[in-house]
Length: 428
Image 1 (cartoon, rainbow, N blue to C red):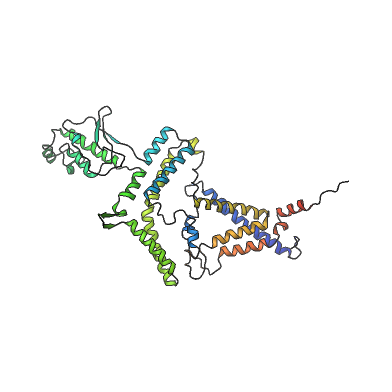
Image 2: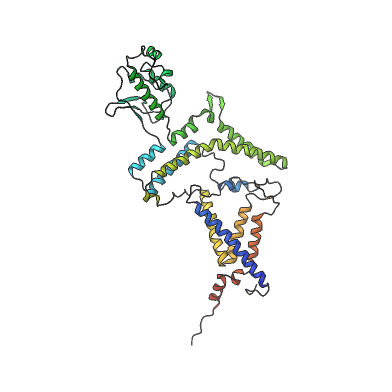
């Protein structure tokens, strides 16, 4: 077709150019907005859209997401490995000093011991009589309680549980129930004390307060310790097996069963009733996922916020920590930069036809995860479509632009055409 608008009216030419520029502007704005969010606390990602893909291409688009069902986050080893990688990248990117690394380790791994002020260990209290009864981190070989005479501190190298707190209180001859009260021991406490070492009321009160404070400090778990509880110790989440018999089914197993059943029924669903039933099942599935994965995501986000608070001003000027090069990250980057670059090309009319073709292909990729086809559940929202929606309409408009030389009518393509169409000057 001729580059001259001789076969198309001038008004039609102007409207087609305006359509090209409008679509280009929409692409550019979307791309820049998404890129700008990468510097915020909530960077844009296509993960949610792809993880909720429906229709015949569901598995393909969900495969672009690293963990569409959150099962990796419920795996202890995978989650710990991801946190260790994050710490290594964080330390390297911001160049943490030794003090910052130590504080970061405390946030992630936890303290090797807990201390509280105690001006003196009351005579008659034998800490060797204390026997730990709980379960502890595997790297702690000899959990115990000691007294640091130099610093006047009561020290414990493991996390106290309630029964152990009571046992420590009892070393002073104080009943655990009375010891929990922050008051001067009364006659009943004096009676209990007669069974233990001879301590003054002030000594017993100081001891109980120190043990309570120590117990309170032990309750502050680092991120890895909290994840260990959630993913290795919590019987409500993980279930309980005695021998070969399952005493209690854990919530994680319930979620896996719900997920398997949903995927199985998805393959055979064909009627509106079945799709409505699947939608209800999906809502329950997402609620269960949020119940299990939500606390882990929240704890990790809280840890990252506290880690960022350790940085000094020169370190903060380096910007946000780059996200790891996962598969979904590659998809996000490709999407954001494709929108931005194609938007610029369409606005200025440079390489208009290939840019329009590429943009049309991108819109088709946006269309296919949730196509408005018969037998495919409608995505949430007020819009209702059948075969044709906004994405496919925009794709057709871009194909029309690709079929016409709008860049030569108004655009940099016209300038390129003039430059490359000039014949070389004849030599005299």
